[in-house]
Image 1 (cartoon, helix red, strand yellow):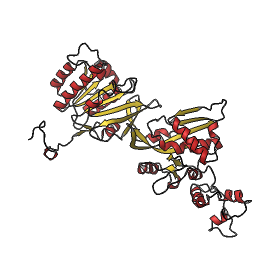
Image 2 (cartoon, helix red, strand yellow):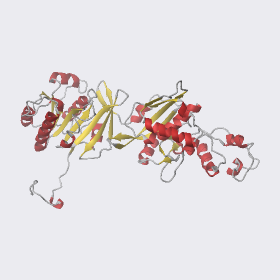
Image 3 (cartoon, one colour):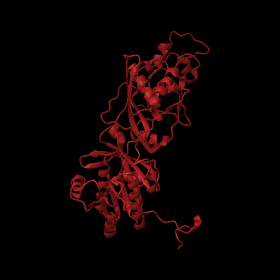
Image 4 (cartoon, one colour):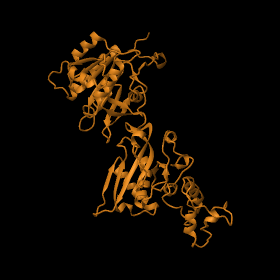
Length: 471
C-alpha cells in the first residue's frame, strides 16, 4: 500500500469506489448526483427563512428512520433548543424520529459528541453560530470564525468518514457567510431559495466534486414540510386559460451560472396597454429587460408591428419561476406581445422557444432533445412546435405564420417561402388558403408575384377551396 502523502504516478493511485447514501428525498438526491457521497462535506446556502433548516431536518429524519440501512444522524443546532427542533420536526415525522438532537455552538464540544456517538451523518445548523477553539476574541458569525469552524469540522468529518451537511446564510451580496469564504473548503455547495411563488423552493448546485452542477431540484413548501415536485410544469400550468397574450414555451431551468439539464414548460403572459405618458412603462417579471428592448427592435425591423414599443408593456412568467434561461424566451415573448396587440390567440396547442438573432432569425437552442421530450410528455403535436434546429431554421416571420398571427407574405421576393408557410399554418389547424385568395383576388399576375393557385398546383381548375378550419 502506497503512502497517500507520497508523490506517485496516476497509474499507481488506487481507484477507490465511491459509496453514495440515498436520502429518500428525491429532489435532494437528484441535485447531488444520485445521493450523498460518504465522507463528503455539503454546504447549503440561502437567505434566512427559505426552508434550509426544514430541508436538513427532513433529510436527517429520512436517513435516521430508513427501513433499510438506517443511519445514525447527529443534528446540531446552534439556533434552536432540542425542544424547538422537536416541535418543528413533529410536522415532518409525527411518530418521532430517532434523529439525535443537540444544542451546541462550540466546535470542540461537538467534536467530543462525535467521538462518543460516532454518527454516520453530522448536520450543523448553522455555521454562523459556531465558535472555533483559540478564537474566543472573535464573535460568532465573523469571517474568521466561520472559516475556522468550517475547516475544523471538515477535518474532523474527513478523518472519520462522516458525511456533513452544513447550513450557511448569505450576506447582502448573496455570498455564503462573506465573499466566497467557504466554497473552497467543502466538496459540494448548494443554493436553496424561494421563487416568486411563495410555496416553491429551488435547490441548485454551484459546486459538486462528485457530480454535475446542471441538475435542479424543485420543492413545494407544505404544512407537512417540503414535498418533492417531480413535474414543475403541472404547477405552472395549473388553472391556465388560453387567450390573447399567452404563449407556452419549453425552457431549461438554470443551475449555477448556466442552463441546467431539466426542461420544463412555462407560460409567458403579456399585456399591451396604450401609454398615458411620454415614457412607456416596462413592467417585467421573470424576463430580462435588456432582452425585451432588443426583441422590440428586432420586431420593429422585421415585422409590420413597429408601434408596439410605443405602448406600455407588462410581461409575466407564469407560475412564479425565475430560474429559467432567458434567451430561449425571446420568441415566445414576441409572439405574446403581438398576440395581445392584435387580440388574437395563438393556434390551439402551440408552443415556441428560441433566441432571436439581430437578422430576424430564430436561432437553435441547446438541449433540444430535452425540450422535445417534455413536449412529448405533454402530448403537444410535433407540427405545433415552433423552433429552429440545425436541420430546419426558421425566421421570425415564419414563426408568426406558424403561430397563426399573420398571413404569409406575397411578393416582395418572399414567394419562395409561401408553400412552406401555407403548409405549416394548415397543419396547425388554421387553413388560410381562402384568406390568401381573398387577399390576392385583385392583385395582378406578375412574374415576381405568383398567385395562390400557382403555389397550390394540387387544386383542380374548377375545384373549390375549403376555407373551414381543420381540427
